[in-house]
Amino acid sequence: MTTNTSPLLSVQDLKVAYGGIHAVKGINLEINKGELVALIGANGAGKTTTLKTLVGMVKPAAGSINFDGKDTARMAPYDFVSQGLVLVPEGRGIFPRLTVEENLQMGAYYRNDKADIAHDLARVYDLFPRLKERMKQLAGTLSGGEQQMVAIGRALMSRPKLLLLDEPSMGLAPIIVQKIFEIIRMIAAEGVTMLLIEQNAKLALETANRGYVMESGLITVADDSKTLLANPAIQSAYLGE
Amino acid sequence: MDHLLQHLINGLVIGSVYALIALGYTMVYGIMQLINFAHGEIVMIGAMVTITCINMLLGANVALPGILLLTIGLAMAIPVSMALGYGIERVAYRPLRNAPRLAPLITAIGLSIVLQQVATLIWGRNYRPFPPILEIKTFEIGGAVITNLQVAIIVLAIVIMAALFFLIERSKLGRAMRATAQNIDVARLMGVNTNTIISLTFVIGSALGAVAGVMVAANYDQAHAYMGFLIGLKAFTAAVLGGIGNLGGAVLGGLVLGIIESLGAGYLSDLTGGVLTSSYKDIFAFAVLILVLLFRPSGLLGERVAERA
Ligand SMILES: Nc1ncnc2c1ncn2[C@@H]1O[C@H](COP(=O)(O)OP(=O)(O)O)[C@@H](O)[C@H]1O
Ligand SMILES: [Mg+2]
Image (cartoon, rainbow over all chains, first blue to last red):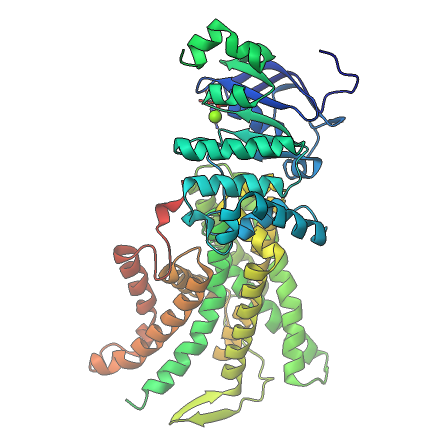
C-alpha cells in the first residue's frame, strides 16, 4: 500500500534504556492520518516504554521520532500535548482528588480558546453521559470503567492528532471493556488517529486497521490486522487459539 | 476562668501566624513530599528585612505614618523572601529531585543552618527590637483585651488565606497546582510546566512566611536571627497536626496549636502550683507533635499517608 502524503508519525531505529536495561532496542513505526494501529506483545515487551517515549515522558537513547513534520527530540516534555501527541496512560493516571470536570479541564490546560473548550466538554459529556452525571464527584471515587472514561475524555479535551492508548481495558470487567472499545471505535470514526496497546490482542486487532507485534524490545511482525489475525504463529502466541 | 477569653484571643493571634507559616510547609510537602526545613529561616528573614528597612527609613528621617513605614518594609521583605524561596528550590532541592528522600531532607537542615549563620553575620546575635512606629490601641471585650495590631494580624491572615484558597481551588493555575501535587507525570503530560509550578509553590509559601515573620516580630516587639527555628518547628507541628499536604488542615492545625499553647501556658503555672511558669509554653507544641505522630500521623484532616500508589 502506498500513500502520497508523508505519515503522521514516523519512528526510526528508536532505542530506549532505563540505566542498563534496554527496554526498546531499535524499532521503526509509521502511522498515517486516520489509522487505528494496534501494538501488541507480552508483558515487558517494551510497549509502554514506546508510548512514553512518543509523548516525551522518557528520553530516547537513539533514533528519531518525527511527528507531523517535526522532530520531537528538542521539545520540552510539557510541549508534546500542544503538538497533538496525547497519551491515555497505563493505569489511567487520573487526578483522584480533582472532580471529574476538573480532570477533563486539565486535558484542555494548554488551550485558551474558552468557547471551543466548552464545546469540546459538551461533546465529551455526550460521548460519556455517565461522566456528566458525576461531573462534580472526585474522580478517585469513580469505578474503574468510569475512571477510564475520564482518562479518555480528558485526552479528547487535548484535541489529539495522535491518541495513544495504553491498555485501556486493564482491570475492567468484560462488559465494560466492550463499552470502552465501542467508544474507541466511535472516536476512530470521527477521524482521530490512534495507536492502541492492548493485552487483549484479539480485541485490539479486530478493532484496528493494522498491527505491530513487539517482543523483547523489537518489532517482529507488522501487518494488516486481518493478516495478523489469520497468522498461525500470532494465533498461538497472542490470540490463545 | 476570666482569663479564658484572653488566652483564646492570644491563641487565635499566634495561631493565625502559625497557620500562614504552616501553609508554606504543607504546600511544598503536598507537591514534592519534602519538608522544607529552611522555611523557618525565610520567615525570620522576612522579619529582619522589614525591621532593617523601617530603621533605614527612620534613620533617613522619612516622616511617614507608622502603618506606611510598615507597609514599605513588608513590600521590601516579601520579594526578598520570595527570591530566597525560589533560589533554595533551584539550587538545593531541584538537583536532588530523583535522589533518595533523605538527601533533600539533610540538605534542608543544612540550608537552614547556613541561613541562620548568614543572618547572624548581617544582623548579629542579639534581639532586634521592632521599631516603635505603630500606635497600639487596646480594646476591651468581655474582660479581655485585644490590640489593634492583633486585630490587624487576624484580619490580614484571613484575607491572605481567602485569596490563597481562591487561587488554589478556583483558578486554572490552582487546578494545575493541585494536579501536579496529585500526579506530576500526568500533569506534565497535560502541558503543565511542572518546574514552574514547583517554583511558584515555594514563592507563594515564602511570601506568606515573610508576612507571618513580620506579624510575630510586630506582635512580640522583636526579632532574632534564630527565631526561625522555633517558629518553624511549631508551624511544622501545626501542619502535621492538621494533616500535612492539606491546606485546610494547615489553617486548622495552626489555630488549634496556637490555642493549645496559649491555654497551656496560661494555666501551666496554676496547675503546677507555680513550679512551671509560662516560659515553658514551648513544650506544648512538641508534646502535640509527639502525640500526633504517635496516635494520628495523618493529622486532623489528613488522608492516609500511604495513599500514593
Ligand atoms: N521505570 C523503569 N525503570 C527500569 N526498568 C523499567 C522501567 N519501566 C519499564 N522497565 C523495564 O523495561 C521493559 C519494558 O517495560 P514496558 O515498556 O513497561 O513493557 P510493556 O508495556 O510491554 O509491558 C521491562 O523489562 C521493564 O521491566
Ligand atoms: Mg505496559
